Amino acid sequence: MSVDLSFFRSQTAQNLRAEGHANAILRFLDRRGVPVPDEARATIAGCTDHDTLDTWFDRALTATTIDDVLTEPAEPRAPQPPSA
Image (cartoon, rainbow, N blue to C red; front, top):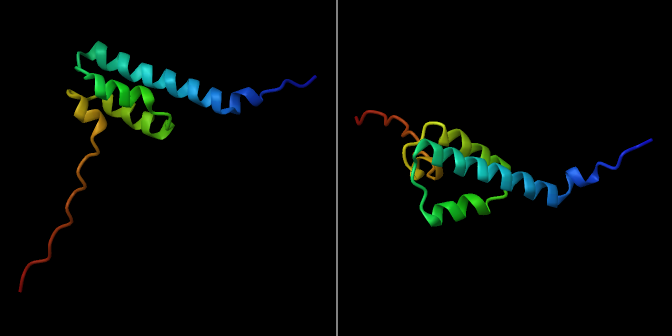
């Protein structure tokens, strides 16, 4: 007997997983006391990219502001060679 697992690979299933992930991020931030304005809440709730959601979740672990979660960290500057 075989079981049809196609639903778990479907776009609907992917969207449901993303929604759950977004809700977890928002709940985590709420529990940590990090204010989340409506615009940021909509950004997180509307995201369906799992890599982005994973990144935001990791940042939420140490974030003190919503910008800590959503803003890309600045690239470190390469050292400049000394002027001659």
